[in-house]
Length: 107
Image (cartoon, rainbow, N blue to C red; front, top):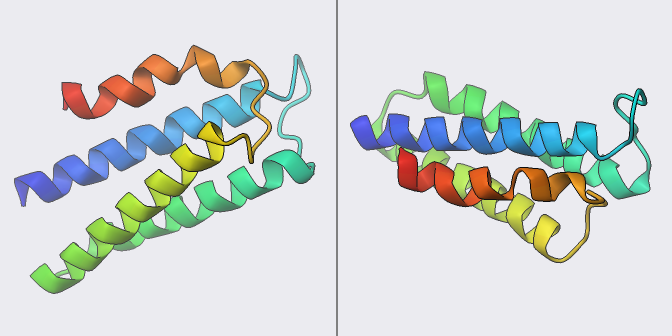
């Protein structure tokens, strides 16, 4: 159970970092901008938030393993979107790149 909570904390951290990067990449005083470049990122973050909520209420070990794999898949998808420029982060994502790589190490 301890490792499962660690997976949830890492996922929550990634979700916060990606939402902050998406929000800050829109420019000053713009807020959330849902254009074609960033809509994919917001949808993926929404799916990740939903999976994180579901993972908090599952009971059995098999369900926890499935949720952990789905959380890993969604976090990996966000990382690949950022790596291959599917989502337009501009330079704002690079403010958070240290957190993205160091978060699993710290926890």
